[in-house]
Length: 73
Image (cartoon, rainbow, N blue to C red; front, side, top):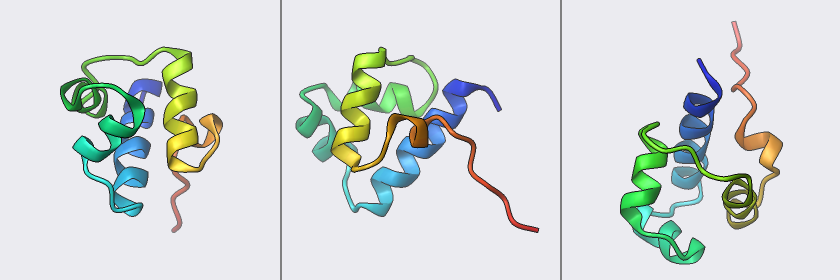
């Protein structure tokens, strides 16, 4: 999985865990829900500044957003 896929997966998962819709999250960030959806579908890569805004809005670190999920066996 490449970095963009990891970000998209983590962003969607954490956003869902916090109970926020794409529309709510987009409003908080001041971006369109279409842009947010494009990031979550790996069609657009956000800037480093936007990555920081995502992390702040979700209450995690930017590193958390770009770290692969740990699997348990």
